[in-house]
Image 1 (cartoon, one colour):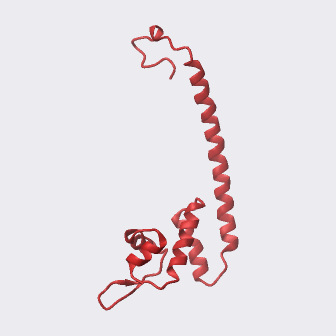
Image 2 (cartoon, helix red, strand yellow; image 1 turned 180 degrees about the horizontal axis):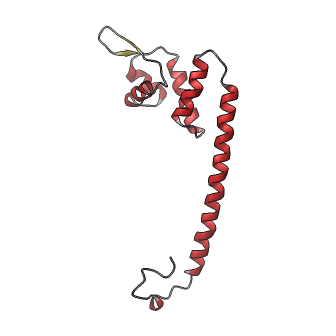
Image 3 (cartoon, rainbow, N blue to C red; image 1 turned 30 degrees about the vertical axis):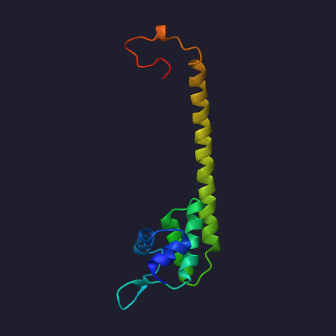
Length: 129
């Protein structure tokens, strides 16, 4: 299947497919006599896996490692579990950081509740920040 058709059925672009190939996420496509890329139909499932991995927060480098394990003929389930566990821990850390930031912004907002422009000094941009 040509690159345009593969892009259309996978909801991506030919440029993205070429990028995936350059990054080692897709095996190099066979070429037609005219030099066009000719992908096997099973490539669409691999692209679906890449999309699902990205949606789960994995980087393309992490997804590539999973694909490399599979391409060696091994089941990557344990590797995937480790990556997902690390991603969840990172999400928990970022959520806690955002909750702290939210509290800090709420405190600033509360301080600014009674805005008195007359109290602003000329040498300050804003007394609330």
